[in-house]
Length: 215
Image (cartoon, rainbow, N blue to C red; front, top):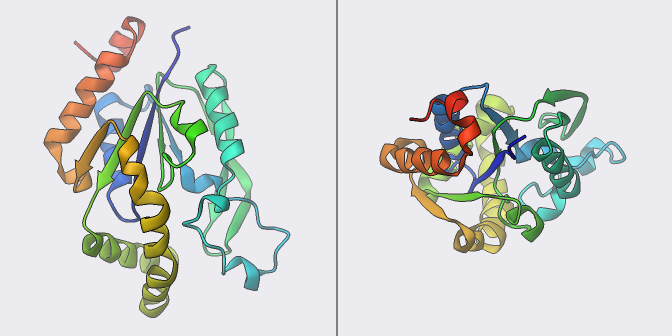
């Protein structure tokens, strides 16, 4: 069996990481790609009271169960399926449910700290950093947190200033130096997406060419 190609996509909150991942997914199709959001690997907090869980710093490397993420990526790279955890941001904890993810020729792991851990970086064949201006990112986060996570404007802004921005400067922005490709403005950058698709096609073994629809 040919070993899957592992791609990491990172960048600050609201940078457009998910848009890039979806664009690649659309080019190659669901039979060829497995999407692994780093957000699914926030640590279980069942041992903490809700009042303590809401104070979790989700932008710090310690918030993630990176050991489990790496273990699961090794399983996928070996051609085996995984049971990916699911996280509920309303309750600030993992749910009791998991999602079965099958190994695919291309595996994309996407999240704010994908390039922060050297063990994870070393697994990646392609490392992508999505670089978007801070004012655009905070507006996108504001809309997302209000619509999807039931937050109010004041709490989103407070969290951004107290936690998100400092963590971005300390842990996320510095990982840009590890990227193979830096993409400004996320999914709107169609030229960069075309470059990515060609690069991915080059790295995928000949045995996958027909499946991926590459010439």
